[in-house]
Length: 147
Image 1: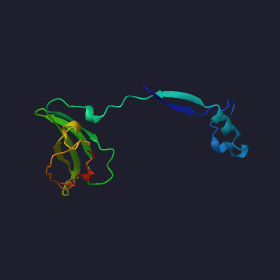
Image 2 (image 1 turned 45 degrees about the vertical axis):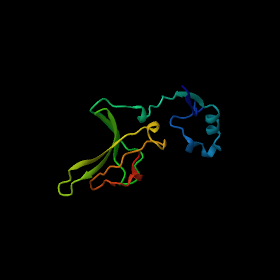
Image 3 (image 1 turned 135 degrees about the vertical axis):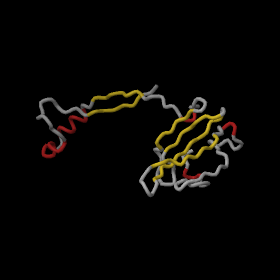
C-alpha cells in the first residue's frame, strides 16, 4: 500500500503566539522561507479503495449513496445497487417535492446490471432498455446517469 506525502511548514521557535504569514510581510518573508525549508514530512497511508462494481448486495437488499458527480437536475440525487432474484440492479433516485404541501419523495429507476465480460460490446456496463416515469426523471435520456 502506497502513501501520500504531506509537508507541514514549521515556524521558528520563539516567534510570538499567533504569528502568521501576514506578520512576515515587513520581514521580506524570511520566517515563511524558514518554515518551508524546515517543513516536516508526514506519510499518510492510502486506503485501498473498493469499487462499487465489486460489491454485490445480499438478496433483497441494496444501498443508495449521494451522487457526488451530479451537475444537472436531470441527474439522480442518489445512486446504488440492489439484488433481487439473484440479479444485481443499478438504482437511481431523483428527489422530488410535492407542490401543494412541500413533502419530499423519490422517483426510482432500476436497471439490470450487465458486467463487461457479459456485454457483447465489452465496454463498461450496459443497461437494458427500460422506461422510467416521474417529474424529474429523464426517462430514456441515459446520458445523465452516472452508470
